[in-house]
Image 1 (cartoon, rainbow, N blue to C red):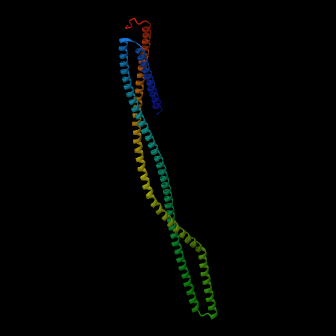
Image 2: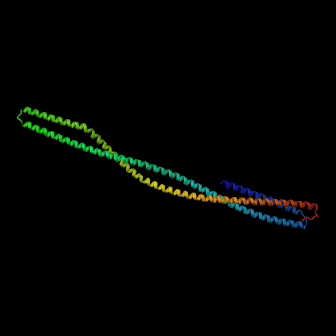
Length: 326
């Protein structure tokens, strides 16, 4: 961009210099005409007419060249402005696409991180559910064992009770006195009751805390299972939209990458056109410099012609009878 501006500045300077030299040439031609008008006679009239005609032709040619150069320069400046506007537009659009890509990458990273976090939570919940199921199976096995032990105890107590009853019946059939039978009956009933109470108390002391703990643990396990299943359902419900969002963002990213590739291709093409324009401007600058050198040479020749005519005019004034045709 800077090289084009410098080239434009150089071209404008060349055009201004050409204008000044053309103006100087017109002034010299005017002075030449004034000098020739001072001559008298038909020879002076013919020379003045030829000089005027020559000046008119030179002026017409100079005006034509100047107008052609101005039109060419204006066309080149318009092309340069268009190229600069196109490059600026492409640069802004590229910046916008890059910002969209950065935003899209941030969103994709956030979605991926949330998916990974939810996946970890889901795996943890599944592990907890599996552990709770295992504990529930262990509790069921323990309850079955306790039920079997209680059944065995009941069977044992029933057997002992039957034994005591048979003993009581045996004692009741013997010809003992009433007091002995009553005392034996009381002793047997007391021993049986004491044994049963001791057995029940031992069972309560042994199994009641275990049963209470198992019931509380089972209740907590059931609540945890319900909560884990609910969270698993919520995570599964959220995983579907997150996957859809990830697919949509991936498609959008692919579209943006394709647009960036197209933008880069257009940018390279625009840069190539811009370089061609710069080369064309440089060629035009060289042509202008060449024309400027030619104009300087013509101006120098005009000044030399003016000096010669001035010298001839002075000689003619002082020696009018001499022949100056040579």
